[in-house]
Structures are given as structure tokens and as C-alpha cells.
Length: 455
Image 1 (cartoon, rainbow, N blue to C red):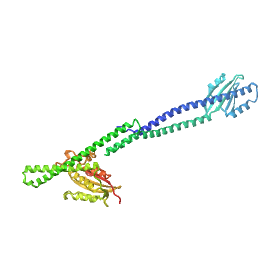
Image 2 (image 1 turned 90 degrees about the horizontal axis):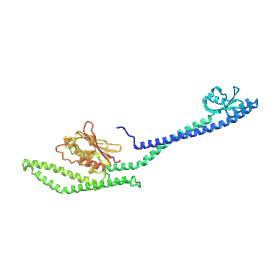
Image 3 (image 1 turned 90 degrees about the vertical axis):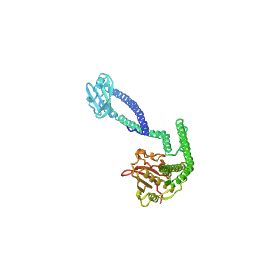
């Protein structure tokens, strides 16, 4: 799949290309019109002046005056031109010396046959205008060669100015495209940000409704969708909380009855003892699920207020490890000094307990607990000896009622898929993050990261 440039870059490139194309066309037209006009004016002026000079030379030749060399010298010096006269097959030159053989043959032939003409040519790298005029009354030809240095410099300056204008226009087009892209894509950026916020769980986000007939329907549709979704989630959460609360009374009665049966278990026949054991397992799972649902419901409704206090993470981790049987206690790694965080102790204890329980039940045993710090954050790592979590499931495992595949689950698994969801909820309420990654050597490593408390 080929990479696609960002939309903002494509808009900038489109503006820049259009600007370059338009200014290039205008520059070409300006160049052709201006240079054509200036050359035409220069040629007209040179031809008129050459005709005046030719009349003077013709008058001198007509009266047989001997002042022709002086006149030609004066004309050549005054106009910085080369003046040539063909009189009786002999070339008389003055001013800038020009070899007559270097003049265009067709220009000389036209003048010799009584036709006036002019041409632009290059002599020694200098652009010049050669004008040939017949002098019919004396059977002679007058040729004047005028340099075009000034107009050539003007053309060079004009070309540089037009090229600079094209470059500036392209840059201005790119800047205009960037400005247009930023302002045109601002509603899309707001929509993306709002959608990301809603996806993160904050369904109270709304888009501002502007007085734009193209954007108003989009904002209203998003706001209506978010509001409906918020109401539905609140209704479902309220329903789950109400049901969980209503289930606690009959569940307590059943657990008390089960406790009585368990105390008299030895008096029961084997088949009844097996039924009591199975029922006790399901009731414990049921109680845990109801407790988790109630806690999640309180979190969603914000009914549980967090009580923040300085908490030593090393103390919590040591207590969690000590609660396990000696033969299953993991290695505990702690940075010194042990990092402290501002947290609700009960919830943080629940987070660590859920991670330890997850490693014991689903990760084939807990192998390592670590408390680390760095970069202003405290970090708890829980390593297990299981098969690890596939990359595609690493976000899903923190969703509610998410459970592993049946092949990876233990037969005595009593989880309901709410333990890691509670971990994620509690960690987020502490402005932290929770994720899972591969453990070096195999297995999964569950990580929670919290802002470290100041000294």
C-alpha cells in the first residue's frame, strides 16, 4: 500500500502549484508583451535616427563636400554607433569599427538594391541593431550599427524580476494553502479530538455549533449521537448497579445457607457433597462479580469519592506478596528509596490484588513483583509465567467481561472478566496508565504507572 501525503500537505502543494502555474503564464505574457513593445520602440527610434543621419550623409555626398569623414566621425561618436557608407563600391567606416563582411548579406543586398531594412545581430557577444538605407540620389548605401546593451540589461533585469516573482508567488501560494488547510481542517481536527475523548470514556464532550450551513449538521449529528450514547451508558450503568444492589440480599442469604451446609458437609452423602462444592464455587464467583459490578457502577456514577493520601507502593507490594502461600511467593524488586504516590489506598490495594489474582489464575503463577521509579512516575510491574497476551488482545483484556480463550483458562476459573477492567478504571482515576507487554523470557508483564508524589 503506497504512502499518502497528509491532506494539509496536499492542499499546500495544490495552492503552490496553481499559484506557480498562474504566475508563470502571466510572467510569460508579460515578458513577450513588454520585450516585444520595447524592441519595437527601440527599432523604430533607431530607424528614424538612421534616416535622419542618412539624409545628412546624402546631402554631403550630393554637394561633393569634403567633410564626409568628419560627419561620419561625429555621428558615430554621438550615438556610440558604427557608421558605414558604400560609395562607388568602397566602404567608408567611422565610429566603432565593424568589418562590413560581418554584416548580414541580405541586409547589404537590400540596401544596395534600393530597399531599406534592419536586423538584430550579435557582434562579439554584444546585441546590435543594423539599419541599412539606400541613398538613391548619389547611388550609395548607408549602414548604421547601434548597440542594444541598455535594452539587453533591461531584459535581464526583467527576467530576474519575473523569475523572483514566480518563486515568491509559489511560496505565497504554499503559505496561503497552509493557512486555508489549517482553517478548513479545524472542524475536522475538533471532530477527531472529540471522538478520541469520547472513545476514552468521556461522553460529555460536545462539538461547538457554528453558523456554517456545511458544518452545523455535522456538529449537531455528533452531539446528538454522543448525548444518546451517554444516556444509554448511564441507563445501563444504573441498571447494572440496581441489579447488583438487589442481588446482594438473596446472595447473602444463599452464602449463609452455604456456610451452614459446608459445616455439615461430612454428614452429607458423596453426591451431595460434590453438589455443595460446585454450588459454593459458583456462589463465590457470583459474589465477586456482584461486588465488582457495584464498584464499577459507583465509579461510573462518581458516587465513590477518592480519598488521596501518601501511599508507599513498596509496602502495598510487600503485603500482596505476603498474602500468598510461601511456596508461591514471587521475587520482589524495589527501587530505593521506594516511590510514593498520592492515591486512594483502598483502590490501589484492589488494583494490586486484582493483578496478583490475574497472574495466579490466568498466568500460571506469579513470578515477579517490581516497584520502580523514574521520569516523575512510579511503576508497578507484575510478571507471570503464562503464555503471554497476544498483541491484538492487549487492549481488549482491560475491557469489561473480557476473558481469555477457553484453551488458556483454568478449569477452576471463577473470574467474570471484571478484575482487569477495575484495574484500568482505578488507575485512570489516579491519572495513571495500565498496559500489558511481553515479559523477558516469556510470559506477560502487567504494568501500572502513576504520577510520583513530590518530596
